[in-house]
Picture 1 (cartoon, rainbow, N blue to C red):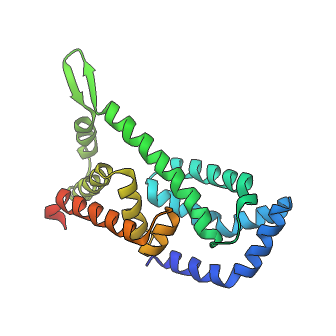
Picture 2: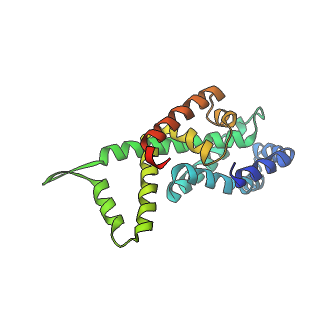
Picture 3: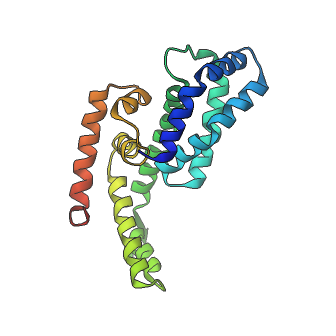
Length: 205
């Protein structure tokens, strides 16, 4: 498990009574309490979004959207689950939306029609990346590109489960809670994602 995630989990358990008092204050309209709640989770949310989206710009967008949603909907929090589960559910849903939109844009833009016929953008990007790079850096870049391309081939939900398990260190039960599904459903989704990744990266894993 990622050490940041483990430390955050321990802190959440220790801080729960204080955290719930903050939430109750926010529900009563205390803006200062909300600011304090944001400070407790801002870095975790940013790390989660950045890890899932692999884009600092998109992560900042999700960060802002997530806490805006929290502020608007905090009155609906009923203390029947941990606050971090409720918050992470908001963040992962926003990330899923971004991944779905990104997948549609990539499919639409994969092939450009030019006067000379279809041109694949990815080919030209690879050529640009190779220019001027040492051999090792180029190999590492190509490997990262292959991993990124394999992740892109997953469905948004498969990618979310794969990233939450392998990059964020969440257990399957927690993933199920965050995504609003069962542990078994999360396990099956992870299995499908793992099989696709192994097929795509066969000689690298």
